[in-house]
Image 1: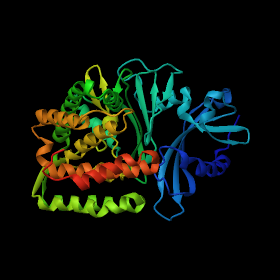
Image 2 (image 1 turned 135 degrees about the vertical axis):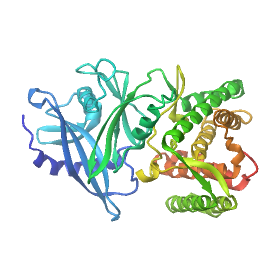
Image 3 (image 1 turned 30 degrees about the vertical axis):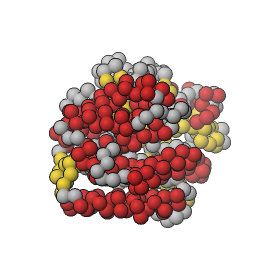
Image 4 (image 1 turned 90 degrees about the vertical axis):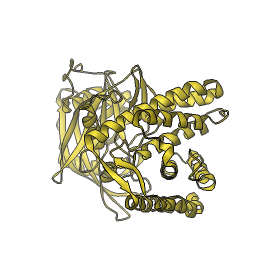
Length: 443
């Protein structure tokens, strides 16, 4: 069987325009695509003539009906004459006598993608010719596929020029032998408009690991009976985050934070809140109080040095392995540009993400927790962070509170776009932070 890609592309582009907006990794919810163009095709395997599949990486350029800037996305596809039932959930389009589908659900194609990264065989035996694989069923802006229960293949979906922070930071941390990250095995990198881009990466997979959010919710449901036990886990998380921050600072440097930087942060956070309120009507009554909370930053003269940080830290990004807590997914906050995600920030932003995550776990527990479970976890986390770093986040209460508030505002937009049934969780947090928060009230 032969496939005329030139003829196929035109028909496939129309199907992709309808298909892409429904994908979890599509980053412009609420912006209907005007046109999807296939700007690059890269074949990575082809057994179509022998009854198998052709694997092709598609680089898409999407324009929008609102006339805003275009975006680039990557979709690895398989092309077959017919599909088994296990591949039917991945179908994109049927064109004449072939079917085009997402390659992430097809183990032989996943194995071929893995070999593109150069990971297989680097330190141990390569995967089998037909490896087992399974996409992780989690909500992410990239697609993660477990291969042979020992590799984690990450396929980045929205493509921007510049090295992806996940690859960049893991390379830096790998040179320090930091025990709180998994090893980077390889990456697929190239160019777009003459600038570097990252298409995919491979890490070691931890099959027995439990993510922190799952563990926290289980502890929150148990209430006081397990509060002390999980507070010890939170303390260990704080130690792990502090060690990662220290190694990133050593490898990639820091910069001082003075009054001018804090005033700029006020402007940045205020602009973010105003944009969020334009998008989410429920935030608008709270906007004046949010502005006032950020405005208090102008009364400060200094803060912790800025540095490269995780950028989207929460309980779900920590994995409990046999050796302790591991930080995962250094890609940065969804919705931010690559330049923003690669910028230096206060380490308090990562800490704020963790404090919000403890609160989230408590509010979303199936049964109400007793006492101040989230506060106890937050204090334990800060204690662990302070022991390793020498920096107690609570000594920068006003700046920390601003970062926590900014994180809650970000969560409101996220839930509005992806899980509207949960929007009350961060909205209540924003209201409490601006109505009851005071810079001297700690966490």
